Length: 378
Image (cartoon, rainbow, N blue to C red):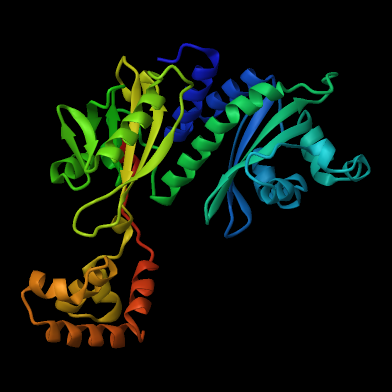
């Protein structure tokens, strides 16, 4: 599939997003491509301002557990990266005065003792809850003033940022690293593997349900299609870029696919995936589909939380989906006056005054999806 060293590096990056066990391998590929002695990938929880996880490869021998529990809290370089625009490269030794570094605990006891004297780093992407930071290491004792190939770094930056965006998107929908052959049915999100022409090669059960419904996405002549022609063309373009048939470098992307019945649009992400990860010997793209309404509370849970009747719960969920009372009257087979009475009762039981407040309340109720145990995944 990938023919150049650059494309192989890009595929390695996206494979690591889909399977976290490949993280160190991806960092090795990135470091090798840009001339760094090592690399690190940090996931930061913005709600707690703490580093949630670190993936590392290369020259550093520093204790990751010590970084997570102590040094990340006093790391003076991390706030600089977090505050800077995404993709803005910065060096530790240029951002922090040498007089400050000379006495800095993080720099001396963690970085230098771990075999690293400088880092070229940047924030790749951030969502409301998380951000991703990448750092490229310069080994202690390296005589070169600029060990990094900055042109190669800049060339990789769009792919790194796309991959980070995909990573955080997967986190937002509750994704677990189970995209390996035989495990994709354990994902709540819909997953499809296609060839370069958009022909479906494999799907999980969630994807099969979406395709059978034909609500927004369907199959025509064996190829995945959207309900509108321009969406189908955009989807085909993303798949072509992900599989490398356009002759350009491999890339990932996303788009919204409209649906019928007033349902929120599908969020569709397309990314490259190696043949070995997908389990097939041909250029592949992964198409991941999620729907915002899948993360909404159920009628049963609403009834349990607020003491709503079944009819009231059904009405409340429909209102959150944007349905009007006039159309619901026909759909439910009741008088609109009955729905107004039910809605008034729902507002009272939920402790809100307006319908807009009810929508906001229900939309913000966290939803927990039960995932299979590790034993079930084996």
